[in-house]
Amino acid sequence: LRHFLTIEGHKRETLTQILDTAENFVTVGNQPVKKVPLLRGKTIVNLFFESSTRTRTTFELAAKRLSADVLNVNISTSSTSKGESLLDMLHNLEAMHCDMFVVRHEQSGAAHFIAQHVVPHISIINAGDGRHAHPTQAMLDVFTIRKHKPDFTALRVAIVGDLMHSRVARSQIHALNTLGVPEIRAIGPCTLIPPYLEQMGVHVYHDVREGLKDVDVVIMLRLQRERMDGALLPSELEYFQTYGLTQEKLALAKPDAIVMHPGPINRGVEIESSVADGPQSVILEQVSNGIAVRMAVMSVVLGRKPSGEEGEA
Ligand code: CP
View 1 (cartoon, rainbow, N blue to C red):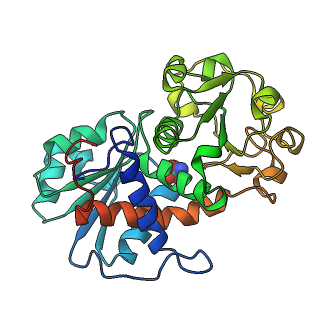
View 2: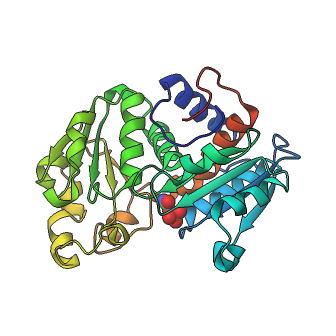
View 3: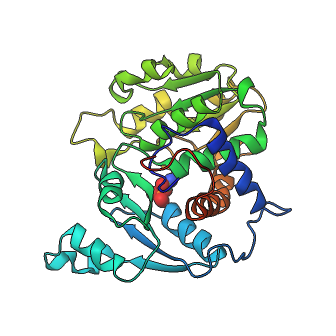
């Protein structure tokens, strides 16, 4: 496992190994460990070409808790603004003897492109590329699900909202399928449900009440307007009335269903505050778990532990 670019292509054993490794970083009380020396002497570079709150900061915390040195490159003040190409910037960072680039980019495929052009000792982790993939988000999501619902093979999971533009949903569906979840539902308007979902074994619902019936896990997504290219959308109020998660709609799911959201949340658009902050919400637990799961991904990749899946994925 040289890079971690997508969920696709990984076996169930590899995903389970990452989840089990993450468990080692969570102590009693669910707080990730303070510091372990696993990546002492390694240098990890955060390259975020697109904005982020949770992913960038939890990658930084995770790297520091593994005792790595961390560089956060500020892209807006870097010399790319003086005409330096992406590859020239990467080659300069290579010359500083870095070990890993954590990359977020608005273009789908950017992390793969970088992985193809870096020198062999550097590993790439995809921290979100366009609408393509967000594999560490999916890993922290399935880690959070497993904490509450340990048997993946007994679950009904609903993903609600803008799946069309969501790299998170694509990666979640691959992870849930790989881990053996028997029923994944996608709920949203026709315009926000991509046509390929049915080929991935996902059941599509346009009626949110029908789709939420008896599910164990509800994953809400925001409207990703930054990727919509001016497409016609309902107003936020109309969207909330139709698809927004309210206590009344959540009551259709199983009584012990958990509510998830990768963030950032838009209150009153895809979810009402009383649900986001309510007893079934695990939204902030997802954020905390992101530290342990990213520690696991980085240590597995730089430790080159799982074998047999070298290269691309
Ligand atoms: N979930 C997620 O990727 O959040 P950020 O954009 O804040 O990193």
